[in-house]
Image 1: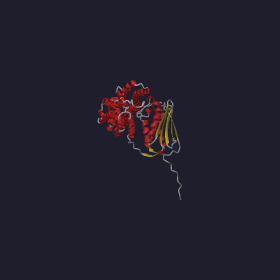
Image 2: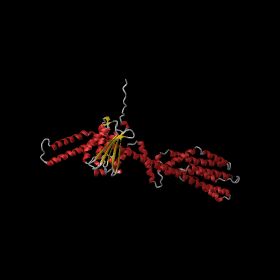
Image 3: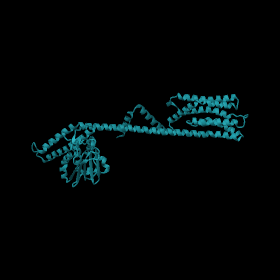
Image 4: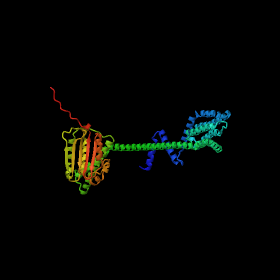
Length: 501
């Protein structure tokens, strides 16, 4: 098949699919191409999906986020005046409102027109706005409180805020660092100015928690991206397999249609092909026999004999092609009746006996007695046996032996076996000799001219009888061909009944 033909076949096969399926395949392949062409290995659809996951996480947290803010403000009021606590709560709610506004604006934008970089910066800006409240909390102090009481409260709230931000917003890159960068700067300033080692340790732990949870969030994000890549590769593979399957089905369908059209054409051309050949054979035989008078030229008579023999060979070839084509096209008419397999086999042996004696081949016949009749097409059974015998006579050298056996199978069916002592068939050539017009290398060198249709016709006719064909061969030892008829084709012999008075 040429490249152009393959391309046309792919287009034809693709457009036979439903529109939705074609769209899914195209989308999957496009994502894979984008990922492969991306310098970072992250396709734009992956980035958009991560943004969508970030929005979903923000929506889930939005329902409960005001509660921890108010609780923190309530706890803060215990260490400072109410005005400062309310001011901090207002700052925190403002940052929450900025994130809410960015999220609602993102949800109103069509998914196919999202600018990933722009929206990533907007979301990070919202997180930075919320980080101002945490920086404000980090800047608080309480000199009038007991030792480390406020610092413990401050440490617990900020540590939880850092951890929760990492757990909720890990789908966005650098979100922990962006949110808590101002708070880290203030904590570092307080760390350099404190003389309390415990407070300094808590400040240092909070500063160290920011890169730690940044790494945790990055690891979670990396794992998610890897899962997305594996899923995209799986979808790409499934899409390619689906496309290959569709192309294969289309090619098989076209091949079957072409083969069926060929078989139907040949089956319907039986009369048109045979009629002129019969006329050629008849007239050439009349001329060769000089029925209407002498030819007067020996060369002309030789030419007429060549015409007659060539016509007979061509007629035999056409008959075999037409027989096989009828079977393949389902137009072979089965005339089933009771057939004695042994009797038909002996008749067929009589047809090839003269030729085998001419070549000096010995025929051995072994049949089991009292075999019941088969329910089969006698003409088909006769053709099966004749084809096997003809092949054996062609391949068996002078002085060889052909053994014909007829008997029972282990399953209660009947078989005909034809075994010769010819050159044999190489194992790798078995599929060739069983294919239409197939001839092995040994057959081409040693046998008479043939069409390569004998064994395919045998297999096709046996298939019509629900039978099997078995071909075994060994080089320099010979070949055995076995035609098996199933038990369902054997006519049961009814027992005799005594007459009742």
